[in-house]
Image 1: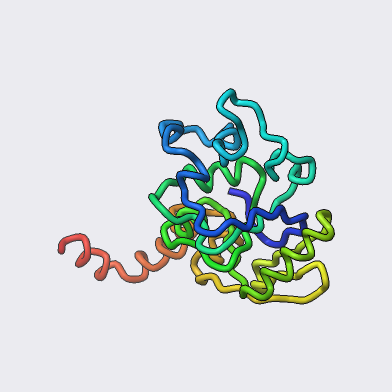
Image 2: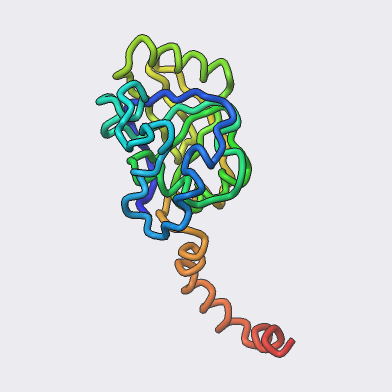
Length: 204
């Protein structure tokens, strides 16, 4: 997993509220287990017609979306059933961060574990950013995980929350298991300095 430090990118607006995971990746594609190529299923029924042709008016099919790393979403994004395919598809498309006002809890957990940063900002800041993007589609936004700040196109800085464990994993570019593996030297050192405690734990 690529470490997340700071990204500066165009933000692509998709401000719909209550977008559920079946919209992000329809259930019929959940049999796919390979993350490669998951981008073709992202918002599949919004992006393509019944014959599989791209809908030119959908934002992700427009030239401005190419290479963008930030998606501006609406309120309560990622609601519905749990599926890791949703963050897989968003990451495969190229997004590293989603900015919204709120996110569904299960989707948040799945996203952070897979390296997708979810940035919750106040509604007024969200509205200002959306308005800016409507006027200037090429406006860039900076997301700095270390300082937990978003710098808007007008230079204003907004703080966002994230739990410290997820933050450290993202900064290091590891998932939960990878974080534990990185602590192996410290774990081994503790075991060697507390042999009686380790034996008691094993015997118990």
